[in-house]
Image (cartoon, rainbow over all chains, first blue to last red; front, side, top):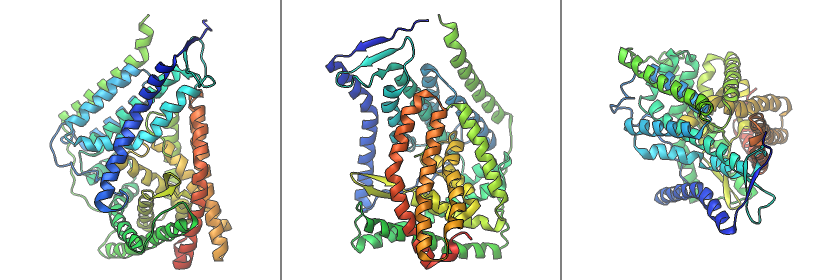
Amino acid sequence: MDHTLNIINVPGWAAVGILLLIASLPLSLLLTFTRHKAAKKQDSGRPDWSVPSIDAYASQTSFFHTWDTRVKIITLFICCFIIVSLENIASCLVALTISCLSVHFCKIPWHRARNRLLAMTGFLSMFLIVIPFTSPTQSGETILLFPLLSSFPFHVNGFYVALVIILKACSVALLMEPMFGTASLSATLHALRRLGLPSSITQMIMLSHRYIFVFLQEVIRMYRGMKVRGFTPKTDIPTMRTMGNFLGMLFIRSYERTQRVHEAMLSRGYHGLIPTFIRFELSMKDIAKGVLWLIIGITLFTVDRFAPMLSP
Amino acid sequence: MHISDGVLPTSISAASFAITGIGVALSLRQTRQEDLPKIAVVTSSFFVAALIHLPLGPTSVHLLLPGIVGALLGPAAFLSIVVGLFLQSILFQYGGLTALGANGLMMGTPAYLCGLLFQSIRGNTLKTNSIAGAITGALGIFLSAVILASLLYLSGENFFGVAKIALAAHIPVIVIEAVISAFIISFIFRVKPEMLYH
């Protein structure tokens, strides 16, 4: 076995170039994110607390909208697990392309998918920056030595691992839009119940999702009141006391408010189930779509595992 | 910190999915049907609380509050956390669908344990309740950081560096959560003590 390492001493200018290139991706994403946030903050004078409505684009027609929700959820769920099992950069790129095409064809605006990718930037850029410098040395691998950073060798292998993780994370994140954005949330939850999730869990998801928007209004109202009284958040104990009281009040108010709603629901005959009028009808077309996706997924997985063995 | 899709090996994410599933089933068994709306309320108020950022020097952190979920819901905290994480992942992509099991384990277990601890040490006075709040607040974050680091450690040698940095990054959060949790618990104890799980 070859135990030698390919150590490449990178000259200063190239080192700066490579590091800038690696940092540019997360940095540019973060910059657009902060600019986007700042623009939103300017409009309303408070931090951005908007919550996207998951099923805002559920009433379109597309490949995914017409697909039976049960088959769609279970197929795409399996595909998500296939994607996270990929190991080669080429197959991850194929998966990313498929996900991008899916977002394109499900007719949901791209800014929603972009926000999903932005939400992961912080966590994923940590991997991109840390793993190349800290991964273990393997025999026969290429190591770049940057000037001034000689105690932290840059492992090309580690960089490859980090890139694969990022591509997989983005592919799965993009698939969330066709998976959950193309049917109303109640249809999705009904489908999950038919797939075997206990009805108490789907009821809880439904209620929690409804209440999020109610409580968000409450928070915005309370925060406005705090601002009017001259509250500016700082890193100190008074800020924390105010925020602690603020959150405590949020919990109590939301609890008392929904207590009344719950009593009203009980008196109208609620017993843990909200009747739905959603009917699922399974057609051959739905199954064909599922089979098509699974064939693509399984082919991708097989190529990912066995292609490196075939190539010399 | 939430684990994204694609980070953990499939074996670990599938195994944590199974463990979280068992945890949810156990949690559901200890919950009465009429308590579900209350759990939903707490779940969504924590979802909203997690949107609020606190300034920390030049940057800001958002609150996680697993300790408070435990203190308010007791054994149902695990269920509440998993539902909250599911909503966070489908609405915002915090965490991810295939990492839901791992994230549920990472946040739900501390919430459950903190709930048990809070009940046993809270006492009857404002002072002991606030101190119990601070301890559970700090412990909740500490435990989730430890579980996060161990999941990354299990995933292979490539992740050792990330695991160490993730542990270190949680230290300031532990302090902030301890202080905030003490204030929240003291507020709830003074205003509506029956809301704390008993």
